[in-house]
Image 1: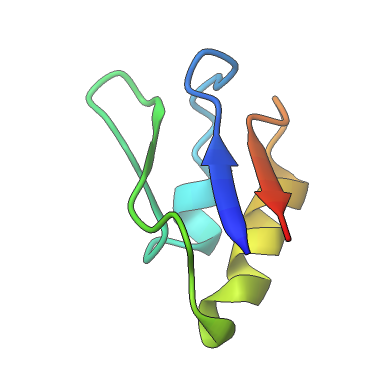
Image 2: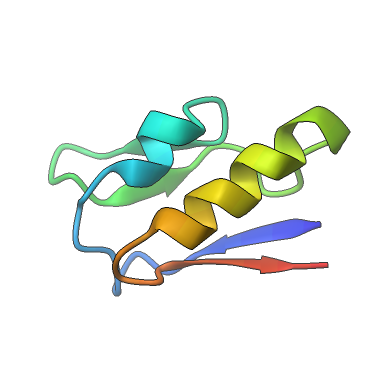
Length: 63
């Protein structure tokens, strides 16, 4: 699994950091920062949930 975060599409809602703080953070402007590009097994459900909750669809998952 690979996480892709499109910072140009991000609207700063912060859902990703709330549900998967081990994978995502936000910069000073509230834009997504990807902390882990290729999460291991236990973190993969959180990555999928963050992608599903992103209102701007700025987070995508590639298998």
